Length: 335
Image 1: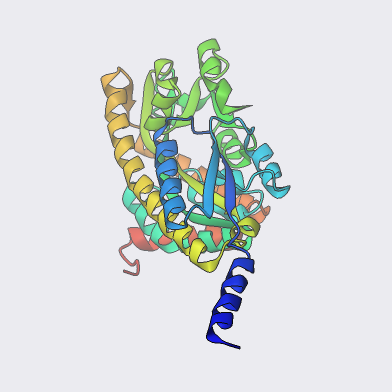
Image 2: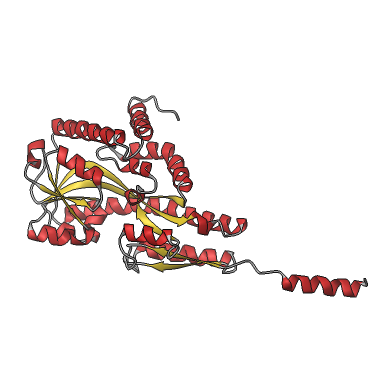
């Protein structure tokens, strides 16, 4: 074969090879269009598109248009969607141990959060991947705190209060019941109306969430004690993700992990500002009595361990979380 014919044959072969398949990930989120999360994710998607020659693209469905978390998970299973932004507890159905960071009264301060996450984030990310979801890190939502229409300083102050509990949040329901509160299940979209009508008198919310959903206009007091640590995450169905080439998977991981690292840091700063904003807007901060705090923590730990025994999440992850925190508090934590 002459050199000319060889070059022609190679050229024809190159044209006959299939181009790398393009993949458009369909992503659902409750975050409204124009929110900081959407802006950051669109910027990340644009960077990924450029770096993969548009082989990898994202189409977002913001504002909850794809339904609640259960509906979104169902749509991911059948391939109608490829991923979504969730709160951690919303993925407990597919990976129960993801609940561990949000156990009620687990943490006392953000230093404890940073230590436990340094130990457990890699474990939880691997667990999600084993369950079929690729995750790019966690974004702090801050501490939910007790916000109420009457001051809550001691255990008896909780008697006869009606507290909002998110749909399907069995952990908070059990803990609130054990603390003497009457839990009321409702979707997050009904909370403001519930406060306005008196159907509920207590919500657990981060300062940022209270302002975003306008709940701060209906509550008068915030008990300044960590109740639940909130965390958000973005996942993609591993079946869809694995269809990408290795090089494209690397780009997506690199960009999305960097984005979530920035979100994690920015959310802490935003919550600190929101905390100050609540005070400036007339919400009165109250301190719980030390005896009440001890009782709440002991009750919550008892219920958390009971739920682990019942299989809501593993006893192994629960024991590990409490053990690590005890080591950290006693100064015996591994550096």
